[in-house]
Length: 167
Image (tube, rainbow, N blue to C red; front, side, top):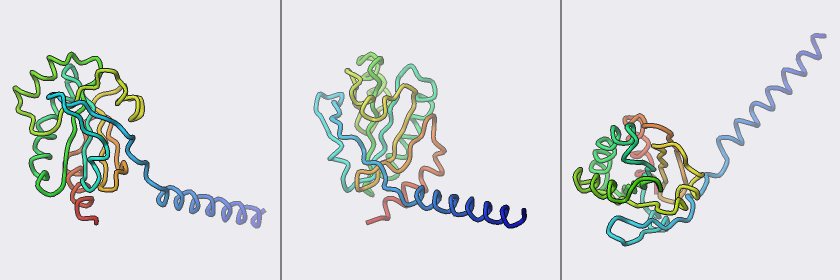
């Protein structure tokens, strides 16, 4: 009886160690290839993220959490923009473009604001339905962290600093 428990314990330990190894050494998911239509009518693409740490925030003007977190997103952008950090705020398909434009202008959002008029961008990034949903993308274009709801900005800043320091 003791021998079978010992063997079962060893087997379980091997599976746990193997699972942890796979989890921590698995390849990061590449950011989906997407074209972002900005408020001024110009476009940018996920290829423009390469070499930068980028925050991609899916939001809506009707989302109270989104509106509440926006000053922290602005502060984060302002803090790191000169160090190779960028931000794209993607307004959801259901958000009226005029509301988005008014919000971005009245709050003087300093980063890129995109309209996802067709819903294609939200679909490509995991069929986003809940706002805010935010992705942090490293310099190699890989998604490092996903936040559903407002992130802990202190922890986010630590992660941004770590990613900015990477070569």
